[in-house]
Length: 154
Image 1: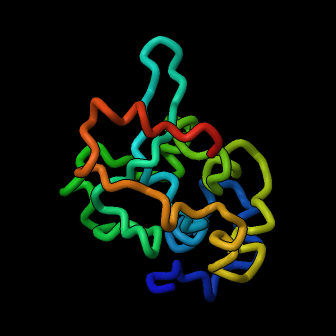
Image 2: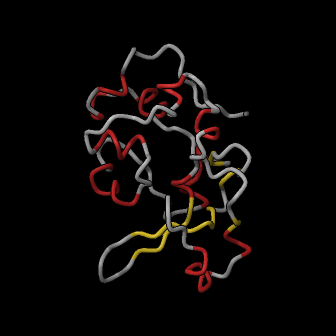
């Protein structure tokens, strides 16, 4: 897979440290590369419950499960959330339950399929945790139809 997240030369076990002590490279390396955060979500105004859809952000490269314009994503998608140790508390509920940022924010360990644990960047795909191959591009689905594409188990 191209565009792998660089994970070389980092402190051993850095992912077990408090999020606010991670270097910028360590923070980026915490991402498992699943692409789930790039799925469009619907939030119930009354309950605050978040529902993931199969509809991907227009910037998601569905082959690599990475943002195609990561460094400039806010320019193209102003509502894109930029995760940081300072913002994770506000947006953790919006992240997938398997997300390393959310897990670590909640004091939970990473899953065995996470590349930092497995040592294999393809372990996310092998575990069935990647969005590769099953998303729909947002420009093909009218927003009023997004409810028809809610994912029950994510």
